[in-house]
Length: 274
Image 1 (cartoon, rainbow, N blue to C red):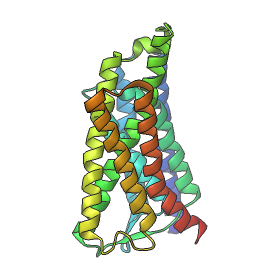
Image 2 (tube, rainbow, N blue to C red):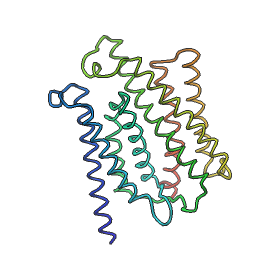
Image 3 (cartoon, rainbow, N blue to C red):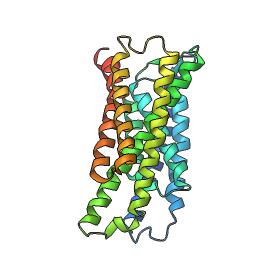
């Protein structure tokens, strides 16, 4: 029975990985205006991504949910985060030119699936956990995912700005939306992510018994630090029009702190100390 489950899970994972890799290849080739796919509409890459997302969701259902509750072990949580990131990305791509972020995010999701199969870990959110705690976990996941997308967008924006400043607008730069559109999308993501991060912190203080308990203090302090970084960036944008290199540095700094808050803490508690 266990062998059959493992085989089914592996097949599901491999199909999701194949869809993600194919989607990333199509998007990359279209971005670089390759003759191989120059006549393919952008919907092909997005459609392959959605197919992978559905199969990835089935894989998550097989791995995360059990009678003991929801498994949020280190690699399972990482796979869930990448799934959420791609869900937000692909839904946004239906109306906005953001699918190019998939060049980095789609392979990342594929790698996380491989790691989840190879190094399965367990850390359950009990099936009897209060609804407030579940809401806190959901909001935190959405905040992390949006700010992860913003970080990739900031990197792409910095590359585009560098090429335009050095008067090299050819190649894939021509396929990107205008710089102003890319910048507007970046701060939309950061703004929405900041609101969700604020709600995540508030819900944590409301529904967790002690946010500064020994096993939570590092996560709490680092999350607050990330909130300050992103809040300062938005304030700098509003007051002084921050953009370009400054926006990139602040965005990536905030995301690194946020990543350490969640995955850094989980890595130490679940993989190092255990």
